[in-house]
Image (tube, rainbow, N blue to C red):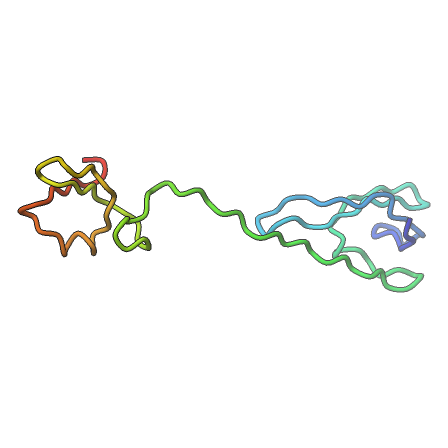
Length: 120
């Protein structure tokens, strides 16, 4: 347990628990503390008051790598970089529909290919 001063009355207090809570900036370290005067607090660790016993070393914020969102759209099979927005297939139906992006579709021969927008 760590000794610090109470943020409410300045009496000696001790950290009784350390935990993290989620936030929009990622998890933030928090502490629970109790003082000799009967006060109980839960607060972000970086908001702790200076201690009469010396400053408390702040615990660094834990910033995990942002989660990767699942693809909700396919990538163009031609360039493999841009989001697809069209289904392309051969007019003779020998080629199955494949996802293509707009910039790659501009190079297609419209006499030989059918282009259908997604959702269409």
